[in-house]
Image (cartoon, rainbow, N blue to C red):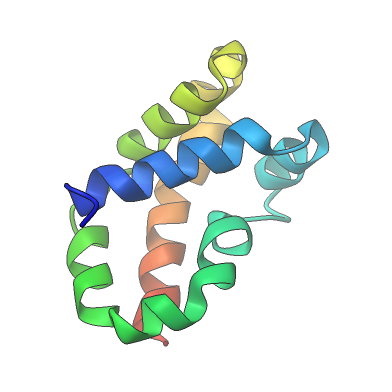
Amino acid sequence: MFGDPKEFLLLQIAHGVRRAPPDSIADWLAGDLSIIDMLFEPNKEILRRMKAQAMEILDTVSGADIREACLSGAPHLADLWYSPLATSRFEGEVAIMRHYVRGL
């Protein structure tokens, strides 16, 4: 339906970053906002129905994948995406996403 599901997820992350207001990026860096808030929560019912498939996809996603998606969505923030704080947040996002879907 969408081709590679992992690529679809990463495209959705890039799209979310592209349209995110600048203050939400700051909130994300501060740990006050996550990808769950922007992408997963609005699609909760779909994720619940496809929980097994979602977990399979998330098992293949890394923090580096999320960084590349964010870089694709907002290349002008490259310095931010490669900062130590962002690197830590990317790895944390993967764990948060897995935990969220597992709990559905």
